Image (tube, rainbow, N blue to C red; front, side, top):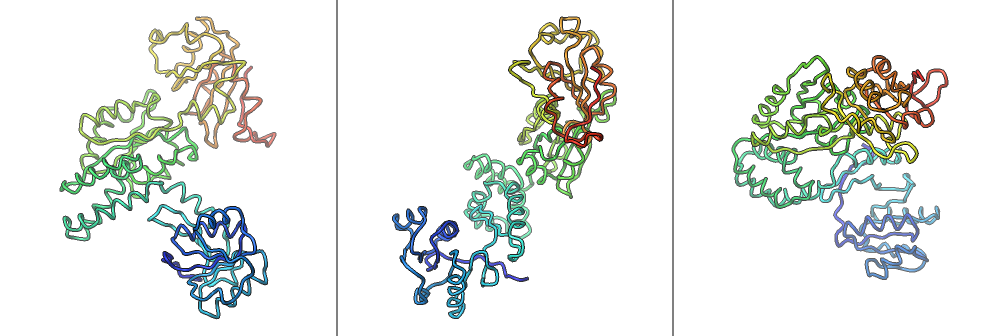
Length: 470
């Protein structure tokens, strides 16, 4: 290692900061948050530092650096744009055995500042040993997205409960299992949601129970692009013991699931119900009652034609705790990636989502209402019944030449957008890759103007492949 990573106690210790500009102001913020007694040397102070000085948060020695200012100092930071002065500060501090950092000058540092993720009292520090600070910052940004802001509160509560847990659970193995269950389970969810009293009650209940309690998380995986998975969804699937997933969940999203979790496909396809809903319900109850953290992972959003409500009713009846993490539904994600706005001042003032799983005569749908103009109709699971849908809409007044689009594999690299008219909907649906979404309405024609995702092999521009029958 080029540097030994350590965390330094600065509370009540004198720290010298040489410089009064923007960089010095940033360092001052960190030092003061750590409780340092801050002394600043500079001819002038930037406004933020001036305000801190006037508020009594720091000492200011107005003028130039003098070696005697190092007397009694624990730590030194040089943050000026004067290279000679910075080197002088380093030399004088180094002779006295005082740790010193010259900002953006690794050769003149006896310590360096890492990139910091602050979830106090939990801190994560990332360093490239000064060789690639931008890379360290990018890593920090990725970790920031993974670590919930509630970590600090969890740590504070755990600290308060630590001795009590130690008295109740005598073995280290028992205590480790207890805290793993707490930090990965309902306690963590309650803290994240700001329900602190309920979270402490959950710890009390967990401590009283000899057996661990399972739970269910209903998670929307989005339409396919793993970048559209929500932050909370990512956090939950990386804590799962068992993941029951649909065919609509993309392999890229499944790759984000915790590696040692059991992944079981319970998906259904039109005309081929590989796993019945009753069997899925049974598996949810079975694994949760074994104390597992069960994630029911569904494509899109679990409450949009996903039977998520039915599965939660089963969990509630079985006394299984649960939570819901919404996802970006296909109608939102796929149309956005296809360059089809669902509403537009000139073309559409309303949106209707329907499922294509309708009876032969279609009498369960209000076709006259669905056939009205100046609205966008988005049809899930509609490829099999595309002919029926087209016929009923035309029969009830929608024009045969109404623009339509069929979006296959929406938001994925293999996305295809097929466009044409309502009269051609069946033909388009038959050619579209699965899963496919049907869009009916004038907004579908805007795809040709504002498509942005994917590539056309001929033009080599950032647009999806298009098959146009119009």
